[in-house]
Length: 451
Image 1 (cartoon, rainbow, N blue to C red):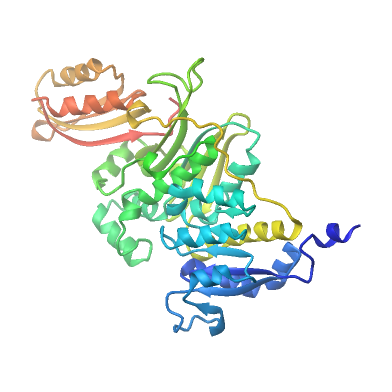
Image 2: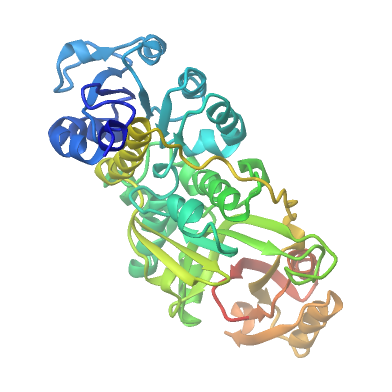
């Protein structure tokens, strides 16, 4: 056996230097694992993995590590000759973007958990990695400890992925699960989530779907070999979900989940995803939806995440686990770090960006879905026929309809068959203008059915 085969081109005496950018919840756990498991990491990589420095905002704070490891000059740390691999867990766009580009342009591999940055700048970062023969890993950016990025890139690279749907935000799932279990309203449950540390002081990114939209963009890009950005994702949050919505869902043997949905759709409205002669498109959206309790995603409760991948040959695969938190996310970061370090040691490369398909993005109006519509109506003869007629006028077929209450409390609950989003939205708008409809109290999409 040659020395290269036995020791790798790196050489056993040369350590792999690591710089960690950021020491929040995730960064702290990454540093702990690097220090506590140095011997195991050396055995798994083939060479020593040494922590060269940690970039922080304030180096005067005691962080439980030797003071000489701390620096406030992240760019100088990245530029050091003894740093071969950079772990970015700062978050946000800047300065993370410039620091990652500096590392990649210097031929240094990068591991990041930064979904916001990747959702908008993957192309730029991937191009820098390719040009300078560096690795870019980001398993932790989508679902914390849950391995879903690598299966899409590698395990399913010989298959055709048709659909990815998941619960990818723990904060919103905790809130909706609690509302479902207790009957409490949104405001009270958000306050509880904040007090327990599941929601940030400013929860906007989570509850309005921005976090999930960034993750959906990454998942769609990987699944469909097409560059998708956060701006391509249709987004609705959960702040308008009411206790009554959960009560209605329960009556239908459903619950409500904030879903990230990425799927292939037809080349035009109403066409199947493989319409001959037309180029299929990609639909990516995030919104709260009714999910039947028999669906596996309905059982995902609390702050847990789950992603279901549907592939042509592999069938349905489900990935489930802790989607956030310092230690779970650090686990995914360290998995990427080991891969990147092994590539340094043996001279390998991570898979690069794959966007050969270049599928166009379908607007939300061209997306097929189902609606659950709750209407306050006048309790008079013929109102049901008028409402049904409005659905028919827009080419939307009704699956079920039921009337609840009498007098001023009368309401109709309508569930549609699958139709184009644009037709459904136009129907709801027309219903709101009807004199016999007092108000459209709620509109929710229905996902996870066989239709």
